[in-house]
Image: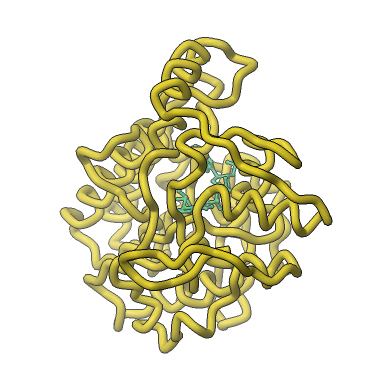
Amino acid sequence: MNVLVAGGTGFIGTRFVRELHDGGHDVTVLARRPDDADVPEGVERVRGDVTAYDSIEGALAGQDVVVNLVSLSPLFKPTGGTSHTEVHLGGTRNLVDAAEAHDVRKMVQMSALGADATGPTEYLRAKGQAEQVVADADLAHTIFRPSVVFGDGGEFVPFTKLLTTPYVTALPGGGRTRFQPIWVEDLTPMLAACVEAEHDGEGYDVGGPEVLTLADVARLAYRAEGRSVKVVPVPMALARVGLTVADPLPFVPFGSDQYRSLRVDNTVADNRVDAFGVAESDLTTLGEYLGVSGSGGTPDPSTGKTGV
Ligand SMILES: NC(=O)c1ccc[n+]([C@@H]2O[C@H](COP(=O)([O-])OP(=O)(O)OC[C@H]3O[C@@H](n4cnc5c(N)ncnc54)[C@H](OP(=O)(O)O)[C@@H]3O)[C@@H](O)[C@H]2O)c1
């Protein structure tokens, strides 16, 4: 199949493109700086900005499937005058319009767990509205919604360390917000399978094998460096005031939207990794990835799963 991967040069995209290429597909990556990409020989590169229709339209010609992996990170305040609405919603609209113009058969839309047109953060709202654009399009589609993704080059563990300090650290609400992190190398084969027609019309929520709080992730990240950390809570209300005040300050990387995202649990009620022949227990834990084993965690009351 001819597959165009918008955002194919990023953290997930780089592995994903390799997976598709190894699977025998003819792959083209589209990004604003495609020359920087670490892609296998034989993968085509196209320069385009999904927020500018004319810059991407021609890239859809002759494609069977378009995969949208374009991202503006939800973990940090957007810089450069752009927004989640412009990139995630506007960019998706442009890709859909161009795909329809060139009779592309299918779109695989990378969304995010908790995407919701009326959700609590601009990122989740833009992702939810973008899903609707894809669902309404004159194209077959599959929507993929992972919890946070970890792996070499990923932002999640470094972000947690940026938010914390070793030995004693303060986290909003004691870092009790829960995530279900999935390893990028576990995720990409599943995402690659989504280009196939058997997944048409499906939406998949996926997560890793365990539920971890932000505090658990901080403990694991420091344990991997041989250091311990004691988490002390900052009341959510105080964190909100601090980050709202910080909103207009360009040198502070977090703002009120990031504060809101730290309050929203990001765990999977029905983990659809089974749709790809994978059992949750086959997946890599964050502790295994970091080379430290988890222990002493609190079982999740709803799932019985144990974090760190
Ligand atoms: N990482 C996670 O934990 C996670 C969790 C859930 C969902 N997701 C979703 O997974 C997808 C991939 O995320 P990622 O972590 O791999 O992101 P990433 O590493 O930041 O990669 C983003 C990609 O998008 C390209 N891009 C950004 N703005 C663009 C624009 N205006 N036009 C064209 N290309 C643009 C970037 O290349 P250039 O900068 O060169 O343009 C890069 O190839 C995103 O949809 C994200 O929301 C990620």
